[in-house]
View: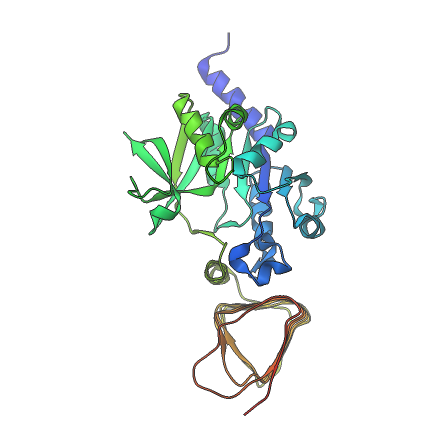
Length: 374
């Protein structure tokens, strides 16, 4: 008979070799409108990379190659962006969710894909700086049935909150009026096959959804091994514009300067600045951290810190900072600074009076704004 130590080693080896990933990429992104009228919220870029791509890359870093993405109304956009997963070193399949019936419902419809295999559930609009590998490794090693991640928040009334007794998670309270702690359960979870019993047994909440908090509570009440770990790194749910811009700021600070573009002798560059291939900068000031994408042109402009400009854009006579500008956008001679803005694809923005202060903009794709000068 194998010893307990040998059994644990066998279980760990099985988890290492067979663990899968499940990413949720449905939802309408109503808090990001008008930007998300034409874009899946999980494809909003952070440092010129869609937030969804960070989730996929972090799972692959854990050695997870089989990944299912649950999609909804924006399925075509997600499929076009991710493809079969080969660009990430993964095999990606897609699971259609007919309606937004809850996170636990997404787990329920993924049962055939997962089988008996342990998996990581990753909400596609969550962003975790530095990846999930240490936490996934500990789940593989500790033999837990469920491993959740918690993070201190300033507004626990808005989250599912973990209550601890004698150092172990005892209860998950959804949006409590009197929070038992300030530790919010974030959108990254690890489960073994016992989760499928839970999602079959729980009932829809008052909003008609199968809640992941009820799922975890079911596992706790059944006496299964549910472990919680406090995050030691930056995390944010990128559901609002302020959150996306904050995540963009954090990623840009972590990048290494790199210049693959062209900068003329009149331009001043204050690193860290990243210029991608084909980028061209003329008579401008670049004050990092910032990134400018391929084949983008910046002329007679000031690009300030914490700004990401995607590929094939043109900026002329512009002051911009703390913003995200997507591809194929033209901004010219605005005469007033653009700060704290999220500007979509194929936008044209020209003109405007030279006034005090700055403008904060949220513009969806194909917006056309032409303003007369002073």
